[in-house]
Length: 396
Image 1 (tube, helix red, strand yellow):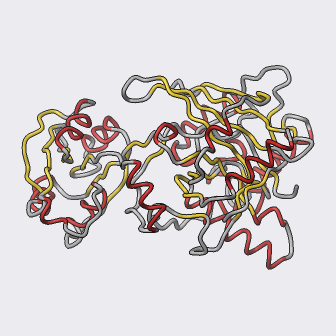
Image 2 (cartoon, rainbow, N blue to C red):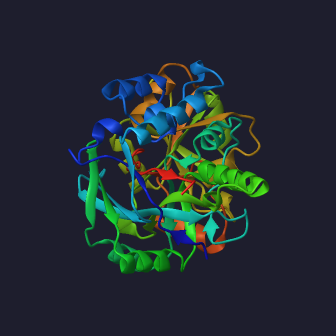
Image 3 (tube, rainbow, N blue to C red):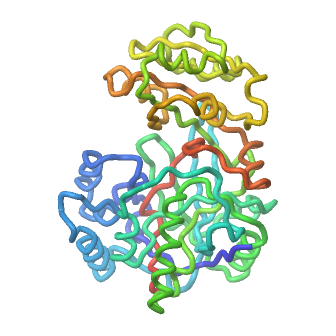
């Protein structure tokens, strides 16, 4: 089973105010350079200045990011904990059903294990990423700037995290999600959390690429006999149970026109009109047990699966769709959010799209139990963790 250890967290100085909203950002891979500029304009110490180097700044941009990080440490903008700690992370939000919910997890350092070694498990196949951005940034800064998201199979982990520790930062993001970070310093509680997480496998929910980069960086450090801290990587861990998960679908955008896509899917699905696509479409898909094609004019077509054609295929929209299109030449892109899909299809960027339903807890658990991977971009875990709540210096 993987080690899960505390570390001396690097945090923004919150002695004057616990509200660190102006200093944080969403994960680097869910916003663009225009939004990056808006975060940087809010504060000269916003984490994007370190976590999101600009390509326009050339090959030295990672060294610039590191220089900024070290300046913030030297000036006391960022302070290191005096001893190894865990960080309890709570998110309070309103879900799609209008319910107010609070999820809870813990940030610590999770062991970086070899691929296939067990203990830390992937849950879906990943798409190739040619860029080495995260690796270059890690090399330059010797730091974990944002956490991998892991799901623990340890029963009772949530109960062990419920008691409040020392609040050291909070923020409210663009979607109204309230994020609170708490420092755990009590030695007995640290030992309990470490023991619980380390007793069962951890399934990677989000951050497969970051975890793979951590493995590459660990191997480089081992070869050079440097940075033993690279044997672990900063990870947020929550229990794999229903009330700790909020999973959205990642929809599919295709280069195929609607009629061609419908023809390719006709042997696997029965098509019926869906009218104009909108927020109500997803709930209708749930009740019908179907998918929905989106045309450039915003109209939709429900696709009800012909069950007999999917023998041996996982009962997941992403897996079934991949199977149905396996003999059709096409390119696919991924997008969460119905309105975002409608916009991208209406502008002519894509010929059509398919809305799919979120993956169930049962299928996520099955992945952990069997090791059978989901297709790429099957799950979108929300709300997104805020970058800047906790950083980790690999030299400590």
